[in-house]
Length: 142
Image 1 (cartoon, rainbow, N blue to C red):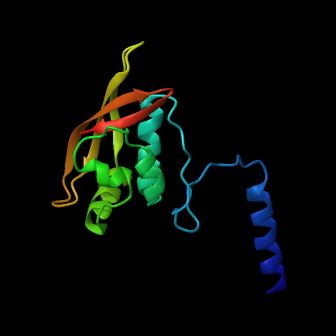
Image 2 (cartoon, rainbow, N blue to C red; image 1 turned 30 degrees about the horizontal axis):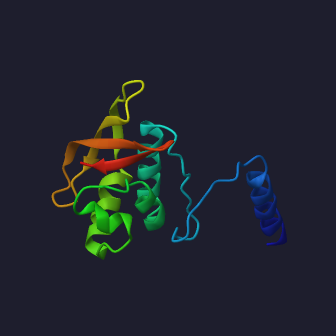
Image 3 (cartoon, helix red, strand yellow; image 1 turned 120 degrees about the vertical axis):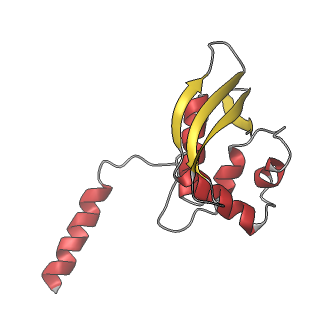
């Protein structure tokens, strides 16, 4: 038993060595983390996917633009109902980026993704509209 515990301790120490510190936000469930990166439209979309996978409501909210569309305002400010959060987490936790259309110098971009429809479980394609706010890229709507 002592050798098993010593082995586990060694593994934990070794796995911690060389790890980069990640920025996490409050509300991230214990044991998970999502890295925050809004430096490009694609990086922001990857942040959204990671935040949904980690069920990190605070970071998901940061992914949306100040002037986001309709129902997304409640996600941005954190007031969305549990059902909306669950649907969003389910859709985006398995999302894959298919195409990024971000013309150089433009303040807008479109990202095509494939994701799972939480109502019927089928794979769907969606276009995410992105907008640049200062140096950061955010989701406008979809």
